[in-house]
Image (cartoon, rainbow, N blue to C red; front, side, top):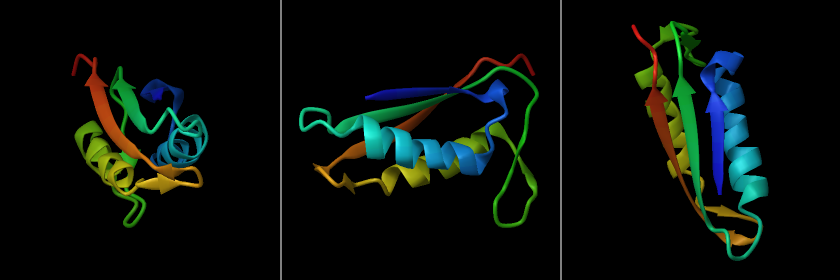
Length: 94
C-alpha cells in the first residue's frame, strides 16, 4: 500500500502520525496480500511543524525522522505482521 501526504495541506505532526497508523497500517494494509506499506510526505514550501513534546518548531528533515520512527514501530495489525516505511520528497526551493 502507498499513502501520499502533501505537506502544504497543513498536516500537523500528530495528524501525519495518525494517518500513518490508522489509514496506512490499520486500514490499507488489511488484505492478506498487502503486508507492506510506504508513507510518503511531500514538502513544497517554507512550512514548519512543531515537536509534540516541547512545541518547538522542527524542519522537514526532523519531521521525517519522527515519522520514520513511528513507521518502524508498526509491525502488526489485526490481520498479522506488516512492514511500514516512510519517505520524503523535498520539492521546496528554500
